Image (cartoon, rainbow, N blue to C red; front, top):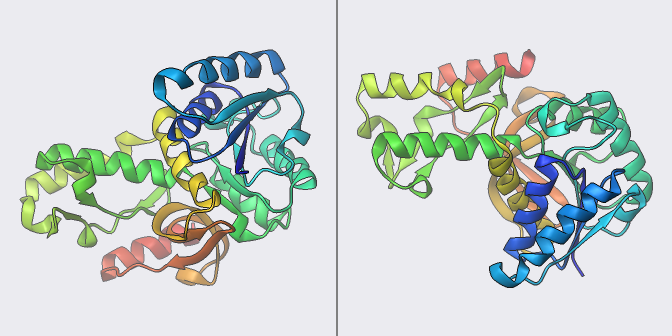
Length: 285
């Protein structure tokens, strides 16, 4: 039985619970929040939509963190202790939540879903000693999706036709390897003139932070690798580096290969000289 535990029943947690349940890749979703009444209301609402949306995932509400025991994946969304962790909650409180979570479940892949949770990913590994392959962050995947959408608008194509990577440390130091961006199989440089390309680059800071629905979709995509599917290559997330890209102990946006146990490999990109310098500067910062 595949189970995902979602820590926090706020705006982000509720959106994630609904997205994961509606996709039907897990048998059960446990929505956990000290405000048990709020969690129960959202779980019931999601469960009652199952007949309309045609999914069979069971959604339940819990008030104690021990409900995360036995889960294949645990999502840090928004908790009472950390405020809305998807909207700027305390990193210290979020790290403490992960410390307590790890006592109940040592094997779960932990997905930090909030946009500002890069430091939480980093501290979970460097301070709490959780294996780095088991702790990832969803915000880069959400940012990647948003960037694909704005490129698609510029090119008048579908976002699914666009391929690009997100690296570095967004939002302060994002690195997009524009030299590798393609749409419909063609390099972006062949499809846009200089003015359009400059306009596109100027819009990058405007899509941060990703909203709760985009973060929920990104989180669901990452969690699904723990539900028994084969390893998946080419997913963007926050992960802690251990020599890759010349850095150690730093959580960064990277492209990874994931399986049921978490990160199996960090895929190092092909970069131009300028992009490499930008990435080294981002990681050093």
